[in-house]
Image (cartoon, rainbow, N blue to C red; front, side, top):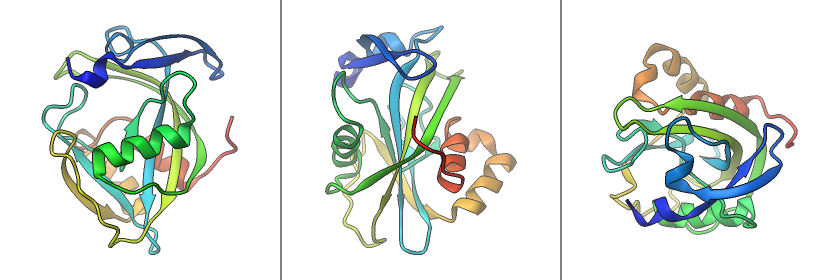
Length: 181
């Protein structure tokens, strides 16, 4: 178990109201427990988004392309604080200003690892320059690339198994923002 697997996450109901806590590991065991999460999409001035290919050692959906960064706030931790913590841990990025563009609730089973994702996912957008210095942690990130989100949305339909199953909903919230819940 990685050290983050023992971290606490906030359990929520379908409306996002907290009602308890458990470990990351327990929340992702079948059948899964709905918990708060976040997905960050870093966007450059041209509108491209930064994708990361998840490292091979990830416990859920390894080696699949996903949004710039994702994770879980600890109980009581703000989304922005948690997201900037994970941006630093995963990408070696300095803090960025983040804006919530919507919420996406999803459930996905990983056939390769037997783990599940059942997340109340806050989608956050951060604006950065494409030359922003990044130092990805190889235990988190196998590869990075900048892509046009409209082209990405089309490719998600063509080759869905190349991507993390939540990425389509995350990109949809970026392209079609909704009011935060």
